[in-house]
Image (cartoon, rainbow, N blue to C red; front, side, top):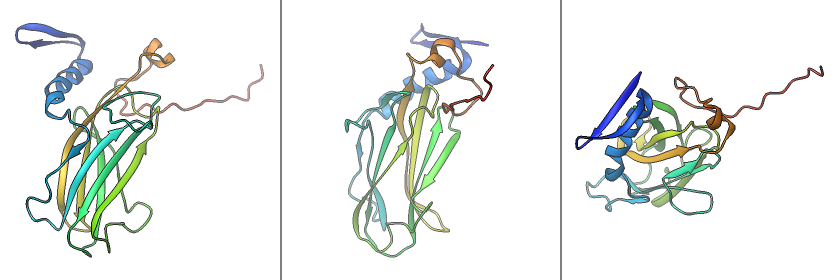
Length: 193
């Protein structure tokens, strides 16, 4: 199937449907969510915990929103705890351009949340491994919540893009359209003949 995306009466994109949707969503949302890092007001609604700052950067330290498929994506997430001891936790979802959650992670996956028993700004970071996501537009969704309860503060829409102009996969068009992720898995054989 093919799609044409028009912008002010002019053809802005012509190609397959999924690439057209990605282009359209990327162009619309690009201006709205282009700031990186994002810094939020200092607890405007008197929440007991709030998101303070969000950022996406390369391992070199520079904030960026476009990554080559061989680059890991470093995600930074600052939380401000105003009231101590409420069984808080922090979480992040990685969504594709259609809003489908590819995976999620939180700070209580392996240990007790650092948000409990502390007051002030706590900085988290995690890395999305290189060669995991296929080329496309992605959005990070962040939340701080009370365990077993509801989100106290959340933000949806920190955008980034994965590109691949140089790999064998890109050259041979080996990214499957219906796959959510595209990890590079090394195949081995014992066949000597």
